[in-house]
Image (cartoon, rainbow, N blue to C red; front, side, top):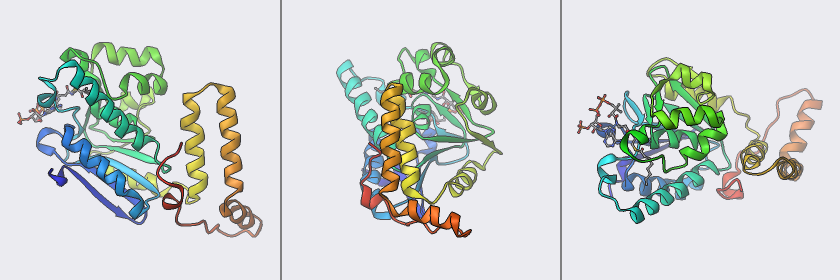
Length: 268
Ligand code: CO8
């Protein structure tokens, strides 16, 4: 396996995962899926507090699944491939840390699905979004039919899914797909800036992510019970005492540095 198809770096608690197939516009193939899984296996070693996902080069975040690799799949292989990427994106989205997509160009098909599995999307102004699958005679198979309607509503999602049309970053922002737009070439810097603005109270951040993301998978009553549990979790952690003491003493809180290692790699 060529390990360089996915790059990993971690600095000052912020991890960056870069899909590195710029000549194929960072299209995802099985090798990328395996390399990404291997990076997630090792994530607790560097114990980041935020993860940023981006694509190599100036033109594409990820231009989808590798069409050449998919072309001759039979239905059973297609189901297996779909499920294997569901597992990868579930691992990514259930990390107990914020995950930010830094979209630096095309985010099409599977590329948009990778971006949707992130918590937040920062896009350069040359970002292009869409689900062209129907134009290839297939449908999104890595969560797009499920995550997009949950994010922007069924009608608006179906418009993109039915037509396969591409939209620019400003339209994606107005639909709620993109959180922030930054100038071309600045997606990673924009994501880094966003990451640095996230609270260092890691347990509180992990619990707020768990409540807000797992809560979307259930009804309101169950979601409220989940929130109560997450609220309680915070009171079992020293950060709650420290945060409230710091407020009373009119000083900055000193929250615990490490938590991914202790808590394992899942929000659930
Ligand atoms: N797969 C493979 N190669 C790709 C892909 C892709 N998705 N996208 C781009 N490339 C390659 C091109 O083949 C080309 O390679 P080469 O130079 O060797 O010919 C290179 O990247 C550059 O592409 P272009 O020359 O086409 O560059 P343009 O600037 O003219 O166009 C586009 C850029 C608009 C991104 C164009 O390449 C394009 O439309 N790409 C395909 C986008 C697409 O349809 N994506 C969806 C794919 S399907 C999918 O993602 C399904 C996900 C769920 C799978 C579930 C599995 C069971």
